[in-house]
Image 1 (cartoon, rainbow, N blue to C red):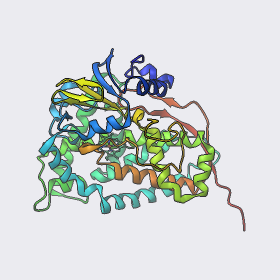
Image 2 (image 1 turned 60 degrees about the horizontal axis):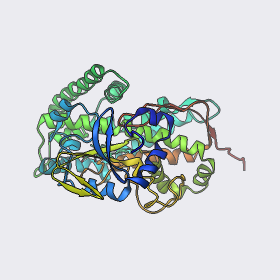
Image 3 (image 1 turned 120 degrees about the vertical axis):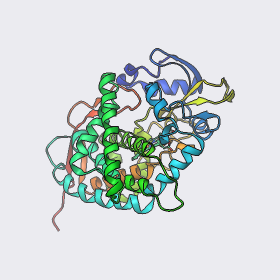
Image 4 (image 1 turned 90 degrees about the horizontal axis):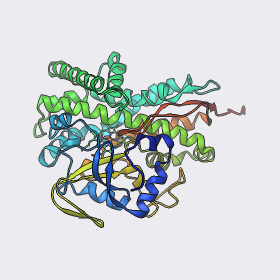
Length: 397
Ligand code: HEM
């Protein structure tokens, strides 16, 4: 490949979409030697990317699912936390978590979120510029994930701050490790509290499973709490921020949505395709295997560049256009196969409620400053986004 897809400078320059387009055209599966992370296979097209993610018997997650992860942390979490588990352990964790991510659980969190947002947006929409990241996109996932975990409200911002630090590649390694250790300590304490005083939350449900449901050890529960915090905060935060940028830069699309509220679902799918903060997911080959034209050897790392798959011109019509009425199936933003994002119903619910609430109030988004993007590690997101969200004019009858 001519560009190093792991180089933060590529993402700062905004040229990653050109680099991915060239990679898809020239080498859909390419041996990539990077300065930061050594050598691995890069997969940049949709069909091969989703094939790799579905074939978990050929590609393990147990050796880590992203480039640059701390090997000792991966080793500690392997087969204890959903995202770095395989086989029977992974199926046991999925079954234990599943009831919380379908139907009633998500609907209840959605009702609470809609109430919070309703009041909160009144203070933001109008003539004043505000920072979308601080005032909106970092709050919505925090409200939702912390409520789901049963974290008391007074601790929400503490936990959100620790999660942001522990995942921020710009922060020195030791500070990230300390933040991560504090998250673990927090959940060890919460497990102790919920053991004797259960509530209506996922920690209590995992500690007191109904008869016949899988049982997790305390250690596995704590690892998976950390997984939910890390999986659910930054990803959704960046999707919300980038959605606002997309709507500001495509005012005709926003207008179409405001005039056609039934497009909310397709608009949310398009936001997910367009924004996708996780840049890649990684697997390790469990045996020699042919991937496209490439002969992958056992032990080789295979990296699927998800936002590139989401712009694959052989899979999506006119992929470089942001269209709220796009049809044609989901993007790869939530991954695929057994590790398909367990939080997808929750993330979709958060985005749907937000977009619906905004569409009923905001006539137009205007960027009121530079969009400050973070240099990319695993997540490519936005750190600051000043915007004016102009009110829908109410015409007196
Ligand atoms: C827009 C928002 C989100 C995006 C783009 C996203 C993306 C992803 C992707 C790509 C994977 C697959 C990882 C792999 O294959 O190795 C994944 C897995 C996961 N996500 Fe999400 N996610 C989002 C929101 C959430 C939320 C809200 C939660 C929970 C509160 C969550 C929790 C998880 C967990 C626990 C896994 C591991 C599932 C497993 O290994 O079985 N995610 N996510």
